[in-house]
Length: 143
Image (cartoon, rainbow, N blue to C red; front, side, top):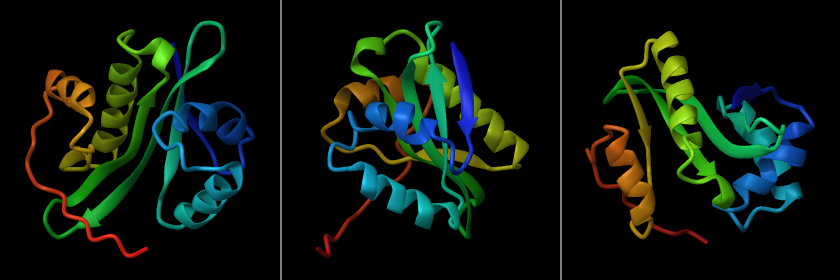
């Protein structure tokens, strides 16, 4: 497996990573994804892709380093997805380990993510990865 941090403007963001990301975020279109990339880049949004030995993208992570009063600096994972055909093969673990390296290099105090309450399979994975539930995430839809 090969883990690659994709830079802004890299054609692999839409050609390789977006199809995997759509498994978690089916509302995205290529146009909307490009818009999020353009706005998110200024907010530190980055993407990392996992490729199998055949060169097929099998995992995607969107992430950013964020300064907060509660944690000082954390690496926040916006998206973490492994393609359905590649689940339970170590892709998610490899992506999280890669992101943890980034977090440590940036002197972050934590690596955090939110996960929908219905995603019980993902929760089991996060617990296996020694992550803990440390807060509730509250939301008020505005649209």
